[in-house]
Image (cartoon, rainbow, N blue to C red; front, side, top):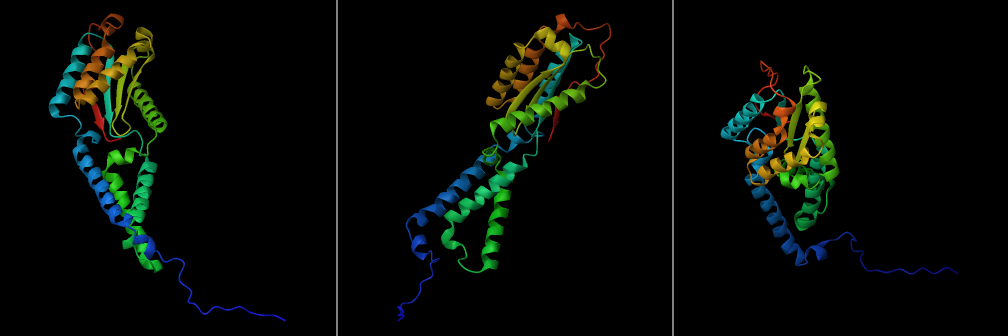
Length: 261
């Protein structure tokens, strides 16, 4: 004999989140998210010139760098070149990770206001959040840097500095000295590279001092002054190891190279 048990109670939807979103926590979370977004936007506005190569130095600072290069190279056959770029690599992964994190936080904090049903409505809301996340991450560079590891920053800045040294060395006498002071704004990295003759003349102890001189100016918000101090430190003693010839052959421009990438 087979018996059946049956209940007449209604079946409630297991996906109902009304009890969860009624929690006082979801009264606080939207305001916390709005505060986070507001702080990031204010920081982005205040730091906007720090990450733009064309604006990071004023015309007066560029003139001081140019004058420092001329003074240094007037007493030596060596070449010193500062290079400032906005970023050493597109770092696309930081943009995608930043947008995904923004969308995730928005989903959690704005859960009561998101569509509960309907694929089209929910998909449209998610697409909007991801789009806003991409724009937010693009604008808020400090936030975007949260997703850049130190290892990745070191590797990309070092690689780009090597490319700059190789490019600037083309056409130069192999026996000539060349020092490149490379600054990557997004990666927050300063790299000093030199040709073989310059390395042999100075040894490895000189270059950390050059980096610290440049970083000192960066920390004070005066990259131009930091570059001048770094260039002077890199050229100290160059006039002895590489005295100027009877006629100075200046193959590289006496100015900082400043560009986006």
